[in-house]
Length: 260
Image (cartoon, rainbow, N blue to C red; front, side):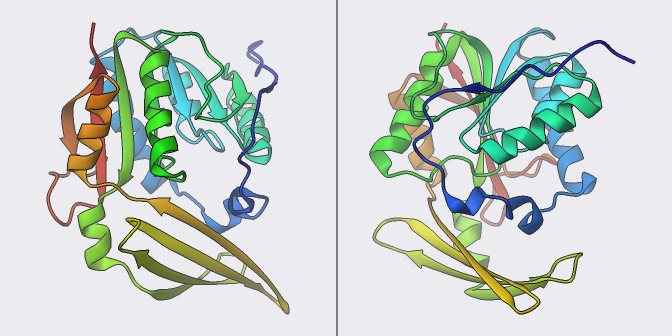
């Protein structure tokens, strides 16, 4: 048995705690290996080509640690930050079970509790970017640039807005493995460039509602936002399986570098 321990979760200022990411989040969103494994493989290859094997990596919005844990197992020095205490608790338990050293910090991505130039790479995955107003979203990117070492790398994964608007369903439903029903309503705010997403969890005779809103930027807008904080996009793909960035690509994955 390995003697490595998961470090205690460090508490920092965390003013933004949406109910959407509460206790039911992992019930609403279940990620099979077929989803996570290609993402981890892509990230491992991208990072290995750009930073030292023991490089410091910040997983921004790490959630339950589904990327941070396998990347730490690969050898990277990963630190996970999230605002949601319940997800960090799950991440700590899973890291302990995997026998990996994964420091976890509870904090706000708009005010990163790290010194300038702390990381070789920063990751922000599964549309963790975009929950705030434009000014605060830009502040997140500025914090990423500040926390990166000169020459460091940023990997940003968001929805491909062009595909999202072409294929989004205003209303849908799914049955969870435990039998509960989830009814989803989706609408697009043209003026704000945001989608509004509401889910109703029907569990027997009980119903719970969860809602959130995300600002979805075009590739052009994101490249400019990154440029304004000193990050230059060097690579862009349409998904973690290496899909070309085309109109119907499922994701928008940008790799950007801070100037040396």
